[in-house]
Length: 144
Image (cartoon, rainbow, N blue to C red):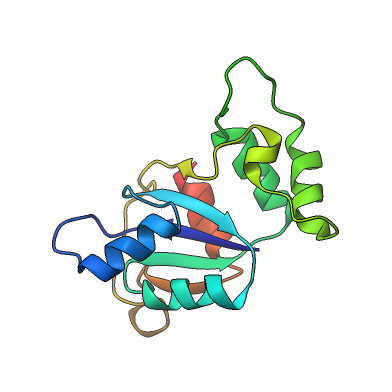
């Protein structure tokens, strides 16, 4: 799975980029989503890579995100344990969605603690935007 965190705001964004961000369900700054690795999703991420930070996550990271930032869709129902939800999302036997577990598919985050040094692309100038690989967990923990 990939974790995609929106870093850039809404001002001055091209309409096609804005539509792609809407389809990824990250409409606000510092919102994030966990999505599966599929060619369609990777194409959308590649299109908006100048506005988001993304990388690979594991079960423990997803469980931590669900536990800290998961919000209910239906307030009357309970949310299952975060570890169980993460396990089922990663199992891949059945295509499960967050809505099946009564969790909204996006997560609202804080701005990163200790700030953002630079938004310039990650491999070049150690900025926040672009592909972080497995180091996206460090950024996510600063934003919880």
